[in-house]
Image 1 (cartoon, rainbow, N blue to C red):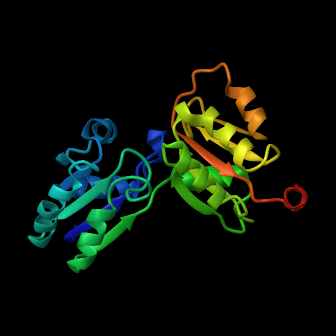
Image 2: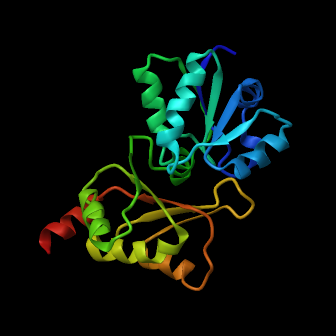
Amino acid sequence: MESGLYIVGTPIGHLQDLSARAIETLANADLICAEDTRHTRRLTDRYQIETRLISYHKFNEAQRSEHILQRIQSGEAIALVSDSGMPGISDPGSRLIQACRHANLSITSVPGPTALTTAIALSGIGENGFVFAGFLPHKSGGRERELKRWSDMHIPVVFYESPYRLLKLMGEIEQHLSPNRTVFVARELTKKHEEHLQGTPAEIQAAFQNRNVKGELVIVLHPLSSATSKNKQTR
């Protein structure tokens, strides 16, 4: 492999979603930078990949980036992976990618699945575009401001959310946007217990109210409908 940084997409759940090109890249790289080496080791063991792993996450990326740059400059091929999906999309990686670009080093993407595009495809409403808003803030004031920021969009808005805040989010959408706003929720994508539901915030709350919700969630806020727009104008 030529020297450079290789951004490698990894499965978001089902291990068989790792592409043949990704397997080849990880197997032939000089080093794999992983968000969690224990998590990535399960993947590399599955495909008998023996490349050395080092951790690269949000708490050490500043100090690790310079070391990785030096290794690339010395002629090595370095693979970058996150726990799932594509590095740099609500996952560590952006700092290193930008550092390599500023140093005029080769950067190659080996694309793979992401929860973002998987969920928007399942929702069936993304063909005319969508907005990705990432994770909402944890504090209530910031969450309210962020939701209101996207309230009048006429294309879908996609959020990532923790299962522990799902019911809270539905209440916030109901309170700050509209009780009639349609929401699509995708959970455990590509895994055994994959689930997706669509409905009003109250209907989503009712479906999950008495359950121990696990797995990161993707929330797709349906665009503002003409009916909702009229109702909003008359209030």
